[in-house]
Image 1 (cartoon, one colour):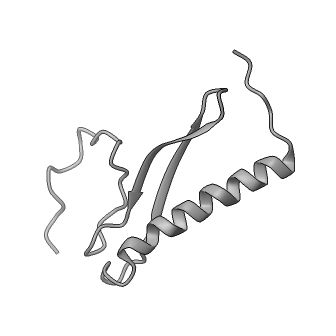
Image 2 (image 1 turned 120 degrees about the vertical axis):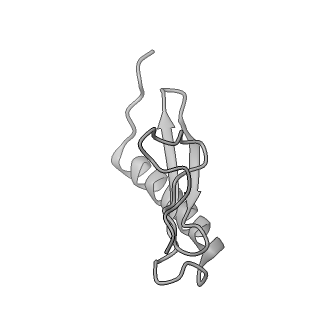
Length: 84
């Protein structure tokens, strides 16, 4: 299936929409992430049927990494975050 290319204005509007969603997501833990900023992560896939959010994540309370929930944990990652 051929992927439809978006025009510059359409792509910019989608980029703003997804960035706004990531910013809203980051506000969930604002002020509760120690010295780290609260960061929202949105993973978007476009397989030709239109963009779709396939994963989200936010900096955890205490400031741990914003690993999206749907990502598999890499084999070389520790089972738990290191103690602070």
